[in-house]
Amino acid sequence: MKNLKLKSARAALDLSQEQLAQKVGVTRQTIGMIEAGKYNPTLNLCIAICKALGKTLDELFWNEEE
Image (cartoon, rainbow, N blue to C red; front, top):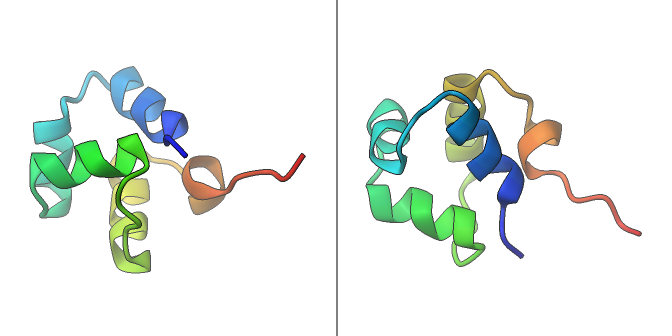
């Protein structure tokens, strides 16, 4: 499942994948794979991304079951 919430939060801060990757210490490809739903990040990476974007884990990584 694509992580559109992450992509949207990143875009709202006018950050490129590369810029976010530098902030959290990973490659641009890693951010791209997380956004595409092809990589399941560690909890530590999730927390670092949330801090960089000023969001909570729930806001970026929790999927509501319908």
